[in-house]
Length: 123
Image (cartoon, rainbow, N blue to C red):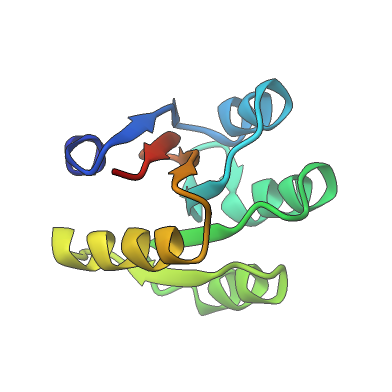
């Protein structure tokens, strides 16, 4: 996913745990967050809740591979934009990013948790 995002002019900042994602939330502002619900040290829903407290306007796209519908529903209740189910193809990722870019200013910063944290520059 990192390589694909870089091909679409995304600056990527990776966070592979709840702890790392939490640090990113306090270090910089992102225009978009891709967040995996299955992080090794906790649930991505924890990150969504913190993000919504610290940066409530930041949209979140959830990536999940498990059939943890409870966590997916919790994420949706927290206001995530969409849920991508693994495995997903690059075309699905691009569609999600393109839909986001259409709703924002030409420069967007994107954060990806578990797999990624990114910054996108439209162009």
